[in-house]
Length: 116
Picture 1: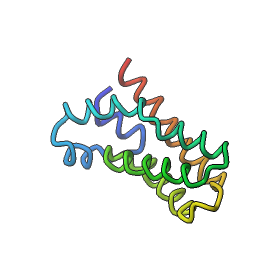
Picture 2: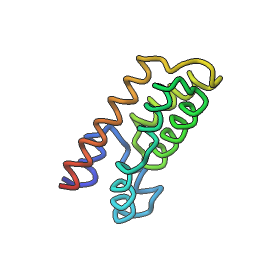
Picture 3: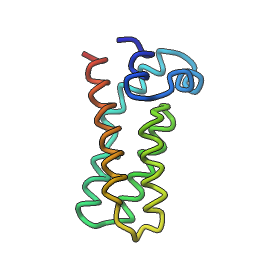
C-alpha cells in the first residue's frame, strides 16, 4: 500500500500532507506515530467520566493532530465536535462523537494494513 493509497482510503489529503511535511519519509514517519497518540482514548475516558472540559481539550488536540497529518475526514469530524463542546459544559453530541470514532477507526485500520 502506497502513501497515496493510505490517504485515499482514510479520506485524507495526501498532497496537503506532503506539502506540510515536505517529503514521503516524514509523512510516513508521522503517520506511523498516530496510533500511539492518546487523544482519542482520553476523549472517550473523559466523556465517560462526564469531565467536559478535559473531553473538549482531548477532541481539540485530536482535531489539531488530524489537521497536521491532513486526515481530512477526522479533522472535520473532530472540528464539529470541538465546536459543539466549546462551552465546555455541553456533553458530547452522540452523533458527532460517533462520526469522530468512525473516522478514527478507519485511520487505525488503514494504518495497521499499511504497516503490516
